[in-house]
Image (tube, rainbow, N blue to C red):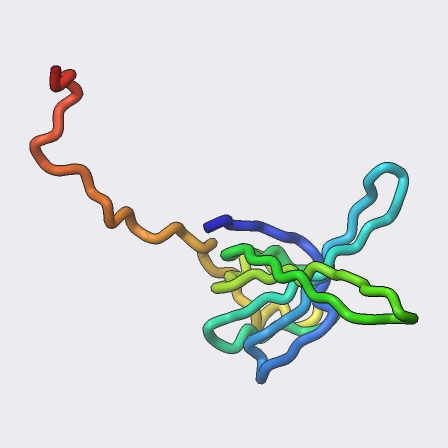
Length: 121
């Protein structure tokens, strides 16, 4: 599982307030680049379009393809699952209170209690 943290602008809300598109903008190699992230929340997020937010969660990608003018085109859909809002500024910021970042699942492969650092040979 990969975790990601993104800062960007809320460009759309959907799925009855449990989904939001966050657009990350930056410059690389002299080009202005925008990446859109679909953020999925377990509860209503209370975010508004135009807000600047910092979100974190579990990263996933899905390749989408379509036909245009007889040519197959591809796009990567970036998603953040179990999204947590770390910071929100702008319209609606009071409704979107910051919450704790996503933490990895607890280790279920616990080391036995009789483990020592001594070499077993």
